[in-house]
Image (cartoon, rainbow, N blue to C red; front, side):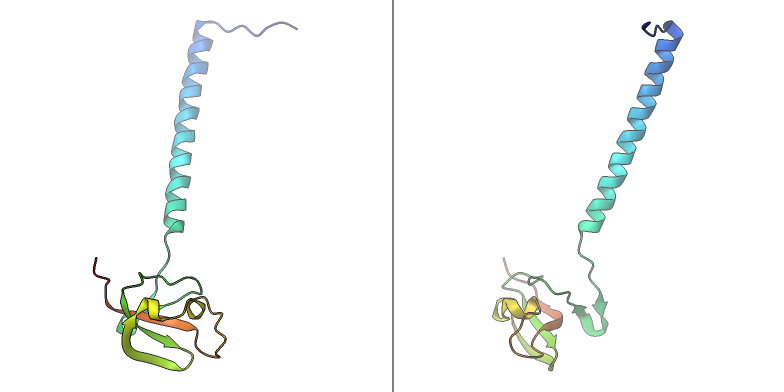
Amino acid sequence: MMPFVLGASGILLAFAAGVVCDRLLQRAVRRIAAKQSVAAKPRVRVLPGGWIRHVPGPCPVSARTVINTADGHGLNESPRFASETPPEWWEHRSAQFGRDVLAYRIVREAQS
């Protein structure tokens, strides 16, 4: 088998093609990374009155944030710390029917 031999112009062309491919690859990697970072951010849907619809999962705010919650029994208008709401209510695994958090409203952010 004969080795493939390039002339000076062939080597230059191959180098230029490699640079172009490398730049295209870098752009593609940046685009994918940008899409993944956007996709990683949680989507929050704010309802009228400042209510935020809750998707089952862990508590989305810090424990010392004062909130109101809405569950299957209606609105809980008395402000309380987020830590006072049991984790299973946030995760929609409540043993008490209708106690799962469906929406919450931030009354006061946690003080640092």
